[in-house]
Image (cartoon, rainbow over all chains, first blue to last red):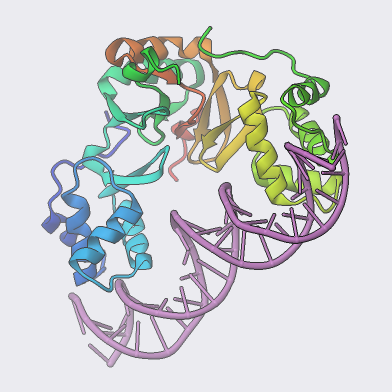
Length: 151
Length: 151
DNA sequence: GTTGGTGCAAAGGATTTGCAAGGTG
DNA sequence: CACCTTGCAAATCCTTTGCACCAAC
């Protein structure tokens, strides 16, 4: 629990502060994007963010969203992970879990890092590899689909 | 070791046979693509296949390669997994391992499914989720990078 | 000859980038 | 009033599709 600089309870205001400190500016667009992402539980795709933000603030360009997202990731507020559907963003504080995505029904379950600790330890032991189990999802069949589904 | 219909030692000829059985045809393009993929140890990207195949047989179109790859995947000869660099294909018989990709140096290590069995069991127990640990890579820092690298 | 396969061109979707105009501190 | 940001348009990538033409069986 030290290989990830956990940021607990970052509020919108904190983000603005983090930007200010770095000489970066808080524009209405960024405010809209930040507020959208910060209020999202779980993950959200860049496309969805674009949609939502443009909904609340027409005219915001997709490139601005992409630029802001990567900026927020550099600053440490956000992180992205790779799910079957592509990249998805979430607040860093919400990143502490492994995504289990069902390749059959598309459902998305989660595994706490605590539960996955044994794998983490196993990988470290056999390879000295310090795994970040949150970056990529783990595919497979959810309980429901693993049972019945002939198709 | 029963949830994956393992195909051991598939040879180029076998592939042609598998296609014939389904009423599909063996064209020179497919022959080139199959031979390229079948002789690849480990994984290879669609773009690389296109390059290699066109090298041996100029004029082959990328769309043909894509179509052939997904066909070979449906037939069960190939599988793809998601690494940091995107989708990568490998022979099904070479698919039985977990990819460990270092986000720092880009190196690619592997973990046998046997070694990962404990995680597989853990996930199954807690969620009834039947994981396919080969479909997505596991990111993190390789032993080397986890140690020294300040940057 | 059927029917499946291929090349080509075009269409998409997801990002990224160059730039001039505009807003923030 | 510097300098960071944005919108726009264009450029990449990667992959998929519609089609007319061609080839495998």
